Length: 293
Ligand SMILES: Nc1ncnc2c1ncn2[C@@H]1O[C@H](COP(=O)(O)OP(=O)(O)O)[C@@H](O)[C@H]1O
Image (cartoon, protein in one colour):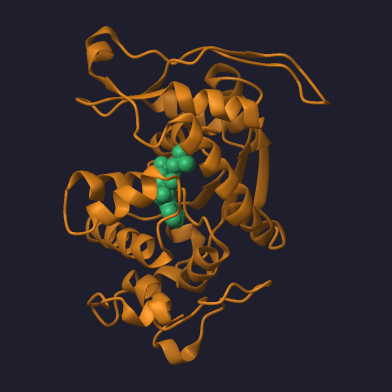
C-alpha cells in the first residue's frame, strides 16, 4: 500500500485507545483485504486498548448499522440512540461536517462524495477516531455506528480495536431505495431530516408490496429544505452499485461471526419501528422508558 506511506501521519497520544484505530491503519493492519477473520489484536502494536476490554456489562451497546443508501440507517439509528442513551455516529455526517468546514480536505472530499464514491479508509478512520476521542473525553460509553464499516478493511480494523455486540442489516427493495433517496430533504436551519417521497410499490417477483408515507417537515422548516448534492439519480445509482460491490461483503464478514441480524423493512416508520424494537427485544424497554418519563 504505497499510497498509505505517502499520507501525512496524524499525531497520536501513544496509549489513547481511540487513536489505536488510526495506529492500526498506519501500521498496515488490515491493509490487504483478507477473506477471513483476521484482525485479531497483534501484540507488537502495543498495549491492548482499554476500549476493547470493557466488559459489555460496564458499558453501553456497541452496535453497527449496515444497509444500502436510502434504507433508513440514519432514521432508525437515531431513534435507537435516543432510546438507549448512546451516541449515534454516522460517518456520512462526519464527512459532511468536514465538507462544510471548508478546510484543506474539503475540496478533495467534495469531488469524491459528489461522484458517489467512497472516501479512502485513511480519511474515514481519521474522522471517526477524532469523533470517538471527543466522545471519550465527554465520558461517552458505547455507540451506534451508521455507515461504518463500509469495506472489509474497515471492518477488520474495527474488529482489531473493539468488540461489536450486534450488526443490524436493514434491507429494502432497490427501486424503493432510489425513490427514498430522491425524496430526502434536510432543513438547512435545524438540521432535521425529512422525506417528501410517497412510496407505493406493488409486489413483484416474490417481494411484497410496500407503502411509505412521506415524513414531512413542520411548516417552519418548509422553506429551508435542501437536497444533498449526492442525492441525484445518477449518483444514487452509483452509490448503490458501490454498496453492492464494496459493502455487501461486510454483511458476510459479520454473518460468519454470528453477529448479523437481518431486518426487512415492512414499510415506513409506523410499521417498521415497533417490529424493529420487537426483534431487538426492546419493546419492553421502550415501555419502561415511557413509564419512567
Ligand atoms: N465508512 C465510509 N467509508 C468511505 N466513505 C464513506 C464512509 N461513510 C461515508 N462515506 C462517504 O460519505 C458519503 C455519504 O455517506 P452516507 O451519508 O452514509 O450516505 P448513504 O446515504 O449513501 O448511506 C458516502 O457516499 C461516501 O462518499
